[in-house]
Amino acid sequence: MVISTDSRMRISKLLTHPTELRAQVDLIVNSAPVADAHTHLFPPEFNELCLWGIDELLTYHYLTAEALRSARTTYEQFWAMSKTAQADLVWKTLFVDNTPTSEAAQGIISVLDVFGLDTRAPDLKEARAFFNSQRLAEHLDQVFDIARVSGVVMTNDPFDDAEDRLWNSSISVDRRFSSSLRLDSLINTDLVNTAHVRAFLDDWIQRRNPVYMALSLPPDFNFPNEDARDRLLREVILPTAKEHKLALTLMVGVRRGVNPRLRDAGDALGRGDVTSIERLCAEYPDVKFLVTFLSRENQHELCVAARKFSNLMPFGCWWFLNNPSIVSEITRERFELLGQSYIPQHSDARVLEQLIYKWKHARRQIADALYDSYQQLLDRGRAITPEEISRDVNRLFSGNFNQFIG
Ligand code: FIX
Ligand code: ZN
Image (cartoon, rainbow, N blue to C red; front, side):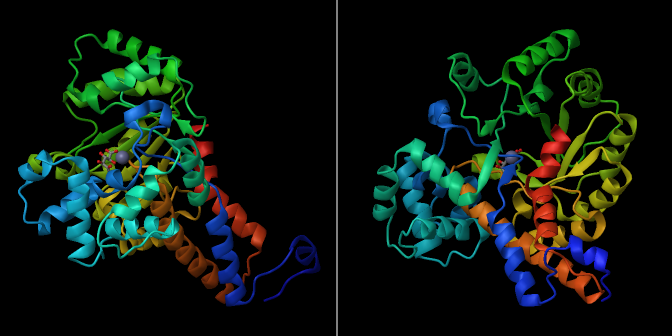
């Protein structure tokens, strides 16, 4: 490797040894603060909407779906149980009677371990006592600190009465929680009066100051199309995004209620159509689109689409994709096709302490993929400096998101 004197003066320290490179990547990835672009978390001021603690963690829909495959309980019997009884059953089924190998179950282990709780406990006595002894405000600070999350974006439904009552009770929302305007329920609204709906959204945006607008979509989402959704996009959502200079987050590929008896856990996925996103980006060049697809089969096409449109920002490994083997594959594919111009992950956390495991596990995959990219560069004749690693990681963990919505 030939390094000019000029470059040498600009370079603080070239990482030419694999062990040193690995140590720096781990250090920088593990300590970088992250802006979590999509969660379902609420701050303590939102009372019962702020979910935390072991019973909420264990009744997360990822885990109920898994527990109900092995427990000798019908769905209906399970839902008739109290939350603590449900959590007890999930613990016994997935952690006592079986080995917790799934990603969601390993997440529970990571959380218990961080707080020094027994990961092999026969029941939830110790964990409940620990969480019951926490004061929420301090616990929240501690969780954000451990997860090194600087801020999270909530998912706010403007048509939800419980949320609306809380917003109107003149609470001051913790500054680490930003709002987003989630428009899924608009799909079910009668669009007779477009102007009326737009005025409602304008007012909500002015009062709640969301960082983006968002919509989840089924696999058969097509654009353009002669349907009510197309009208909603063209006449309400896209003009509102444009007027308020808000990015539009599209989450494509969810098939809701495939098994309604499983409630929140009953959704599935399907392969979506990336060309529809390309057409949206081409027709609305002054709207920015944050896009995630739920199907593994769409990930490569999404990277290629993002190479064609700078108003398209791929983000996250959503939901059923958030498993180490798949996150690893997608992250590597994105580094190869997009450099650092994407957002590798969001937590989608619903329960506060999930931030700990979702980010711990994500950081591990991102660090592995990043290290391999730098190692390849080194093999080909270019070493990297710690400053350059920090620059890359900051872009991935917060810079790209803040700039895109900014
Ligand atoms: O639509 C969404 O934002 C999804 O993330 C949720 O509906 C889903 O239930 C979830 O929590 C996945 O992680
Ligand atoms: Zn979500």
